[in-house]
Amino acid sequence: MKVAIIGQGYVGLTISAGASEFYNVIGCDSNQKLVEQLNRGISHIEGVESSLIADRIKSGRYKATTKGDEISDCEIVIIAVPTPLTENRHPDLVFLESACKTIGENLKKPVLVINESTSFPGTLRSFIKPAIERYSTVQVEHLYAISPERVDPGRTDFNQKNTPRLYSGLTSEASEKTREFYAKFCDNLVEVSSPEIAEAAKLFENTFRQVNIALVNEFAQIAHALGISVYETLDAANTKPYGFMKFNPSAGVGGHCIPVDPTYLAAVAEEHGVPATFIRRANEVNLEMSEYIVNRVATDNGGNLQGKNVLVVGVAYKPNVADVRETAAELVIEHLRSKGAVVSWHDDVVGNWKGENSAPLQGADITVVVTKHEGVDEKKILASAPYVFDTTGKVRGAKGL
Ligand SMILES: NC(=O)c1ccc[n+]([C@@H]2O[C@H](COP(=O)([O-])OP(=O)(O)OC[C@H]3O[C@@H](n4cnc5c(N)ncnc54)[C@H](O)[C@@H]3O)[C@@H](O)[C@H]2O)c1
Image (cartoon, rainbow, N blue to C red; front, side, top):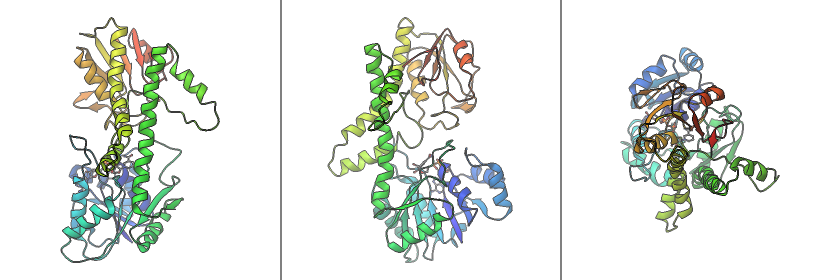
């Protein structure tokens, strides 16, 4: 069985790694440099070992390509391309459209098309299928299914194999074939009654995180105003054995999913006449945290950050990964600079970001911890400046939320 996976990023390469144990996988990506790197056996994704990619290339089970025509003899095609927001924060399906073009132009025989890219309910039925048909040069009846990806980069307890996977086809034949495909490398497959349910579930999962993080971020501000510890209050609430789930305050949300997916849900809600005020506000609260934090830091330092050397510790969006997409550190740095601070950042996991290199963890007037990787020493953080503000709750002895 030959499987094509369009998009070889976090999601696509992770599926390539799992699927190439059982199938011949062709990883199609528009990024020439990435394709060359993958074909040299070098992985760019945490959780996918380079040695595994190199082994699969050697055994003929995996190959990366930029060429759409190399997928023409595949029986299954998986879509794993980005679904970002436009500048005006609307769903941007441009990559999905181009993946559909590749499929339409190159597949002349019926195949199973599975979408793993996150998008709003109705995308498979009303966008992907018609787009592929529009680009097809011959009339061909493909099967269509959705199986949203739940990979959490850097996580070790739950991975592709043991995380339950939702799926649903546009037809029962599509559902059946989708189950057969994933059953080889996923332990727990959960069929739902329609693709729209699977698409909506994925968006709701991430919206649930977005609004709960916003709630705890708002609560952190309330706790501070009341002069009580947010962390102790959350630990106290968490002794309740039912009806409560603990979320931690932070400088905001990051990564490709949590800051983006709820906006897909809000957009489709509004199109259907439901004002998604709660979802929209949650996003705003999380975005506003960076300004709140910088104001707290400024107030603690005489109300003025002009000319102060501020070191931001941790620019990855979460601990122990090098992923900086939508990182809250970006807004924190922007607000610090708008107040005249001279900002550098320390993050040896990221190394280089926006043309700047990770600075030494020392010699600052003010340190603001946005993300704390496990390998970063607490004592060194505390010694890096006379004033340290910690947004993570992990640096004992520092000022914080
Ligand atoms: N990263 C995550 O943790 C995660 C988790 C669950 C779901 N998702 C969803 O999965 C999808 C993919 O996300 P990702 O994190 O893997 O993105 P990514 O940016 O890491 O990778 C996407 C890859 O697709 C390639 N690409 C774009 N358009 C292409 C095209 N037309 N043809 C071939 N290649 C193309 C890009 O070059 C890139 O390498 C998104 O919809 C995302 O929301 C991501």
